Length: 633
Image 1 (cartoon, rainbow, N blue to C red):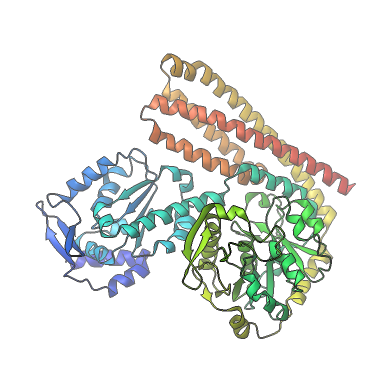
Image 2: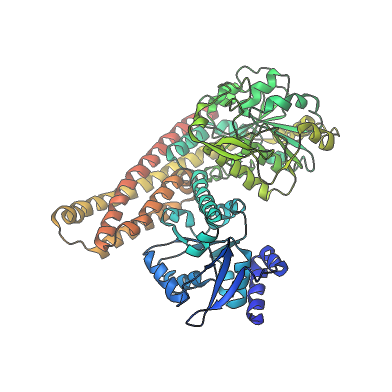
């Protein structure tokens, strides 16, 4: 052991990974299971005991030659994201970072190492400080991969445009590590894939759905201006208990207990179980509504006595939802670009894919602690039901049955869940990870949600819901100032002017895209088609310049803040899909003329999709202008 090298590595580890450094300090290596040997070329090698034999990490002739052959065998041409399944003594990663990373345009390297002892020994043998402190190399050593998913999605994929490169990820499974614990590395791979999948979903995977949101948003302008935002309630319930009520089948077991604690806890219901609660004479304080799809209005139409109940809605929902709820409303903006277009401080929340995620984020924004979840099954009941009794669209939604998987239940036993619920659960776990208070899962059944404390709802009430604080009165008092001071005509005139400015900006952008599309068409007809069908040469340098011009145009339109804000979220799903596929072409074509021709053809197809989104947005803006002009006349 080189004590100075170990100290240097430990110092680097303490700076970037303090928790891991603490584990290393406390770690004691079992020398009978880990045997250091010298290779023929003098480097360190390691024998690790498994069952009744030992596994050697590297070829004992020369670890570096062994690693070089391994990396050459991977045939890496383009690797913006690299996933190492295993670290060993660091030879593979060291060689990749020195010889391949720059050529492969590596932006992010993720390393899973299951064995703390191996990593500890590596720190004693080689100077790893440059790898440990590198901002784009991320180590997960002896961590449950489930704990890594949120860091991968929220921190790694969000940096340096990494989400645009997901499709070109390269996986480096180190053979000895896989032999030592293939189950761990399979799980690490699965969790990384899940993080990638969730990033794509949360970034928006359907531009048509995103456009529908804009159409609804512009149709809701009058409602947005006329009602207070959730910002009026920020931290008004600091240290007070909140109960988020989802519509899982276990809700039947404990929702009756809500009836007697309305003055002792803030009750936030998801829209889908609003009617089941009201039928049992249970009145939430806030009902959260997120979905932009048709039919959401039916959750409220039969509820007439809604005094003291507030609809907290994201104005991406269809305008008819507003009219179907007869009580007072509160506006909740999401962290999407088109809400910035309004220049109104209504309160912006980073909301996951489900309305239950919205309910949690509202409770957090209001300062609630603890946040108590009930009905948050995210799993099938034993009889196959998916929702609480009296759910408007039925207790069994067959959509969830199409992708059944097994997961750990809230009480330890396995339960049946689905891929859709798995995404919702992961979003909850990410929210809980960054929440500074206590989250209690009082769902009496369902799937385990990491980061929560499990209690029965009766225990929660006895422990945390003992004191009256009258939430309904706090809400009414908090929003009263807005109702007295809002100048609706002034706000509507401001937004009418913004609609007109944005529409003109979009028309200028469309003209620019049309001009460029004509240039692309000429290149296709005069150069690419003869190359494809007649074998003629192409001017690769010229094709590169045409592609670069495209990216310059996209940057230009994004500089118009009105156009950027109204369009960025709608275009974002297409941008992610396009750039992932565009970059992946480098893996498909080894010849530059084929690569650049394919890129130009892909740009041509993409322009048609984006152009239609821009034209449709102009139509929606014109409709909004007519509506606003009528309101102001």
